[in-house]
Structure formats: C-alpha cells, structure tokens
Image (cartoon, rainbow, N blue to C red; front, side, top):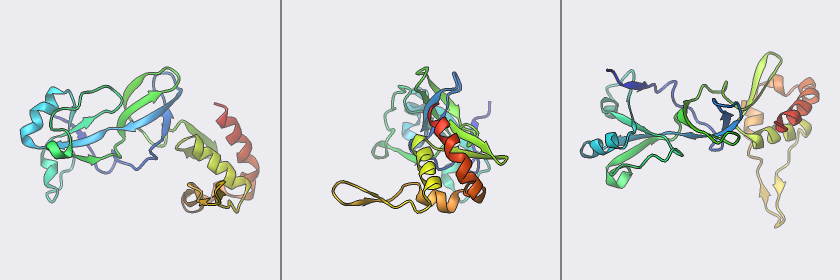
Length: 201
C-alpha cells in the first residue's frame, strides 16, 4: 500500500494564523489549525507510528532535498493526539512547516474537531461573489478591515490612548493584493452593505 503524499506546490499555502473556514459537518464557522509536518530522526520513528500520526511522503521528489526520501508525519493539533517521544527539535525531530493545508477545523457552532484538507479559498467562511469574482477573507477582522478601506480611502493608522500609532494590518493586502475590480467607485458603493450583512452570519 502506497503512502499518502504531500505536494510541495499544492498542499502548502501561507494562511493567516486566525483563518476561519466552513465546518464540513454543519457549515458553521470553524477555526483552522494547520497540521505540523514532522520529520523524525530514524531512531525515534517507531514512536511516531505508535502515536498514530499520519505518515506521508512528498511527491515529485527532488534529489537535492535529501529529507524527501524519508517518511514525514502530520500531527493534527487540537485533536488530543499524544506527542510522541522524540517529537521536538531537541529530542530528534524537526517541524518542517506550519503552512500545511491539511489540518484541523474547530467549529464554533457544533463544536466538532475534524481532520480536513483545505481547498482554499473555496473553503473560506467569509466570502462573496462580486462582478463574477470571488472575494474571500481570512476572518472577521479581515472583513472589517476591508469595510474600513472601502469607506475611507486614506485609512490613517489607528492611534492608541497612549499616543502611539498602530499600522493597519490589512493595508498592504488592500493596496497591493486585492484586485482592482473590488476597489472601483461602484464597488465602494455596493460592497460595504454586503460586508455588513456578512458580519451578521
């Protein structure tokens, strides 16, 4: 029986640490916890198997990446899995990635903890369609940031009571990553109301 595989091109993507996805059980909002990709030292590998961690191999192995020839293990967080002996850097393993699309969804509605593989951005909880394009958000704060930018083009940094300024965390995304169709004059009229309705979900 061949091992399940991880693809370096399709199974890894940077996501916000507080990404919210749709629960596959009830459709509610669920926090996403990416699985840790662990590479054990050979002498500790039996402990990883005994702990029930999912064994994986990278597909399309590149010869210059020597670790690809060894088995890797996915540790799904928030599932109560025991951490095997030797599962940290000091005891003989290495966490290779925290940006894996395999992970755990923790639902705030039905409270189920489920192992999932994300299909991003289709699985984003906060999303809408505008001008035949998908507009998605990592979390509620991301939606609020979008509303703020649409209604105030300048979006000055927030000032704290002590006088210090806090840079807008979504400013770079809005100005450099967001497609122009979502920033037009028409979009600035239509989208804020739709985003407000989205926040009532």
